[in-house]
Every structure is written in C-alpha cells, then in structure tokens.
Image 1 (cartoon, protein in one colour):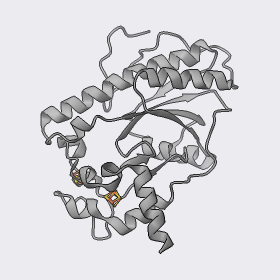
Image 2 (image 1 turned 90 degrees about the vertical axis):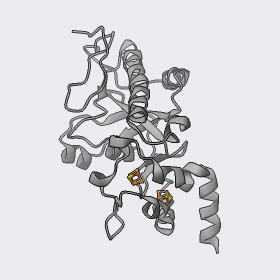
Image 3 (image 1 turned 180 degrees about the vertical axis):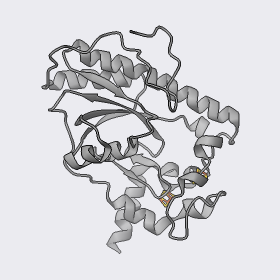
Length: 245
Ligand code: SF4
Ligand code: SF4
C-alpha cells in the first residue's frame, strides 16, 4: 500500500513506502547510456551533485547478509550555511529537514527506473544493520577520512541516498583513484587536534560514541579540514607537490 504522507526516514522505523509505481514483474537488467543520462539529469534537476555506482562484491554481500549487487548512489552537498552554523538543536533540526527533503526525491528516481522496466528499491539510509559508508566505498569513488567523513571528489560534505536495482551494466568504477587521501590524512591530523570531545583514541582512531556531530551538530573538525576549506582538487595538487619532494 502506498503512503500519501511522508513522515521521513527514522532510525529503527521501516522505510516509508512512497513509491508511485510498482516494481515490474520481470525486471530488465540492461540499461542504455541515454537512460543513465536521463537519471542523472533528473537528479541534477533536484540539486543533487551527482551519482556514483557500487557493484557489491560477494564477500561484502556475505558480510552484511544481503542479496543485491547493484547500487546507485545519489549524492548531495549539505548546505555550507548549515555546516557553519553554531551547534544547537535548531541546527540538528534544519540538517534533518535538508536530509529528508533530498530523500523524498529518491522515490521519484526509483519510480523513473521502475517505469522503464527495472527493479529499484531504496536502501534505508538509517539502517541499523547495514553500513552506508561501506556500500559507498564499494563504488571506488570515495574515501573515508580520518574524521570518519565520506569524501567524494565533489566535497567532504556529501550526503547520499541509495537505490539497489536489477541493472547489471551500470558504469561501475573498477579502481579507486582516491587512495592517496589516507596518506594525506596521516600527515595532517587537524581534526584530531581540534576535536573538543576527544573523539579519537590514543592510536588516533575515530571514536563514534564520543562524536557529537549527529546529536548536537558539531562540525568543528570539518570546518578546519583542508578538504572543506580548499576543496578536493587543491588538496590533491598540494599532496602531489608533497610527494614529489
Ligand atoms: S582534518 Fe586532516 S586528517 Fe582530518 S580528515 Fe581532514 S585532511 Fe584528514
Ligand atoms: S564532529 Fe566534533 S565531536 Fe565529532 S570528531 Fe569532529 S570535532 Fe570531534
């Protein structure tokens, strides 16, 4: 049954059924470039920053006990004005509002695929038993930074939603060309020095339980991160100069 009111994505609550079109009975598995472009155009129209694709490995599927392989990642950039706001309950509320508004459009993206003969299901963005970041990493299109942010080339403030689908021939990336980020982070450490909560252990590993980003809207480390201040390309140039020396 299809909901007529969208109450949002919530932890420990089932995914809202906000589709307008049912999945096809015999879904197709091959998509044309034209339709891939059409999906991207639709996402850009709603201010998403881009799309990435994850082909999940057998080991990964086993680890998370899932039975799908093909994932489309719809990325959006969180608003700088929100990121730069002082932490407060109001900031958390506004950030949630922004997240829910983007998420609502993802049902339309799934409907676009269903209408064109493909199976398409949203993945619960707040699932308890599945790591969205781990799925994102399978795209070979991002890296998890030392401060536990998911960095894509368009920015470190990317939020995302995901759809799994019957489409087998998506433009999956074979290799990750962002592996250098780990090395760069190991020379930086600004997030560790600036964290007011001490959310890193003595080996400088991130401690999720101590981080107040989601509870209170802390973005202290993010605001000081070179990837936020300068952007991906400039940091990459700096890194390339560093390793040449
Ligand atoms: S502040 Fe430095 S160490 Fe921390 S995530 Fe950003 S680049 Fe990496
Ligand atoms: S968001 Fe705040 S609490 Fe979390 S790691 Fe960054 S500085 Fe620390």
